Length: 592
Image (tube, rainbow, N blue to C red):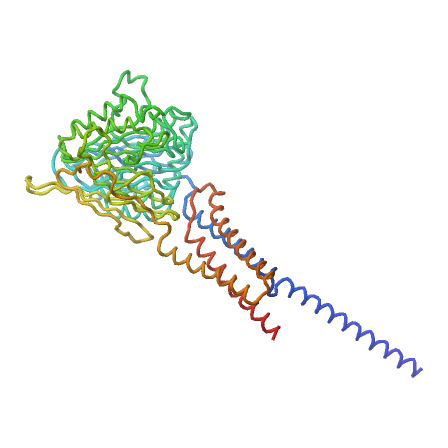
């Protein structure tokens, strides 16, 4: 019996020993697996790349959603068509989403005028009369119970035909419902009016549905920063291609009638529009929105280069005759400012979406300006090109006379778009960053001396905005006769900056890390292994870069945030470099 008990104990000890060996073997197997999967090897290097691919997808998705508003604001107000004693309001009305029942205009917190809001045609138009000139007013829309919905302010024009100092701000091209701070920085300068030079949005609407066009405005004005600007001043707006019917769109395409009606309903403008006075007005509504107005002793002329444009001509004969007549009266004003949404300067290029694609129209108009604007007091302003640029007139003449003098032109913008250049050369060059979102605008101060014998001046300042800061990138002072002889035609430039200084620094560090990672691999590993490691590093780098650019595109936003992408790439390369260095040291230690 004692012998049997001893045998049993021996068997139990053997079983326990076997169990311990099995557990140890299992732990060893799992540890070996973990080492193979997450140790210092190519598979772990791939996991690092995959991790940062997820990071860039998440960050670019969140950044894109944060940069642009996707909601609809159906309680907005726009003010425009200023005169010395009136202003025109557009108040959004919608039976399902709007709440405004009355408009209250106040002066020094005392109600001056109250008008009822009517619910018809998506937007109500109210003209407020009986105001004082050059005076700051506040306004509110209110619910039926008297609660305020939208609040804002505006300043009436100075007395007509009297010299008064005032300022305007102008730019164009903002991605749909951008929430960038550039709009707030413009509002801080308190311009009398903001002139929007086109591409109010990039929705490329070509349907016959007017409601869709009004809802595009709902989306833009749901941006807090844009609402801040447009409730602090009055607006003058003229479309370009993307907010007309789509990229490079021309006049008589599908959706034209809805676009014309949408503009008439949505944007406050001076009435009657000149096109409505041509021919039989009962059959001409809606009409192209080109128009002109006067502030103090400055005449503003706004051309519509979309709704009547064809491959044969940039505008209709009616609009051309109207424009030519306006220019003949230029000597009646201290200054004339002509707003052209399409760029003017550039070599002839058939089919180009600018004045360069309509060389006959450009030559005819250029010749006309040099002949009839004898006061040499015309400044042209354009946008579309996603840059700030200025030419003193040496490159703007396309007529037939030798050494004729011609007008200066200012390119202003973009408010929020990737940089690009169009046309040129420009006497003072171009200002834009090609592979980054640019936030730029210009102001013009009209300065009239107390002594009438002294020259009046236009002081141009162009800004680049980053966060809460404004950087001055261009200043010009134009006084008296401002034309320049074309004898210097062809001189100037239009170069762009590829990346900002901060981005160049990030790219430089990233490049050093890539080179360092590959060099380390070739120094410590065999050639075959180093090639595999280098391939993984480069492929992971480009996958992260492509994802950073492609995610916004997949979200229907045709621009990306360069800084966000570069920061994620830099972090990825730092982790990658440290990983390869530790891996290399372990390889070296094992050899020693």
